[in-house]
Image (cartoon, rainbow, N blue to C red):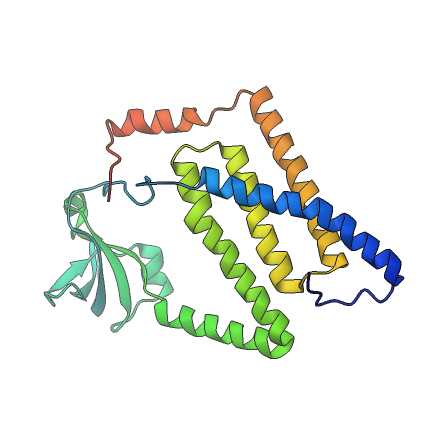
Length: 254
């Protein structure tokens, strides 16, 4: 084991004995996490992102505002960015108009024939913020690296690895019907190993902190399992009510 932190406050003999004890505890947890990931990893197609559009039409696209008319139901005119370059009227919520929209703004819109009764079938969804968000992300990474240097960079790597666990394992596995509590425990454990060791290195202090965090995670998971079982919470009530209002729904490959 490599050590970024030096445990100089401990006697060398005590430190060696402590490392052996911690290794004997952490290694089985790490192996159990890896085995859990392997057994619960979603295989084949999953329902993630496969629900069909709730309304008819080509769906989402982007547009650039060319004029703000202020007319109810067609509050703005915009040029579609779908290759047609058509200029169409857009329905924009009053609070968005009040907050301020200007010609040249790039927005995300949704086409739905159901909105034609109140104005244009093109409805405002949100502003496109790709460039500002990328600039802010780059600035954040730069500040972290300048302040914390390699440790800050590794903390960002740990954060990205944790997000990767959520996107690649946790959400697909849950949506595929894997046991919720066990899947969450395994996913959180993997995220914990990435976040703690990449950000702070492997040492007696960080390993002790990791074990304490894992104990808290296991206790929380156990309490959640017991409370949902004791209260007989299945999570099916809301979905059944929504399905009853929506009618038959199809979930299939995207």
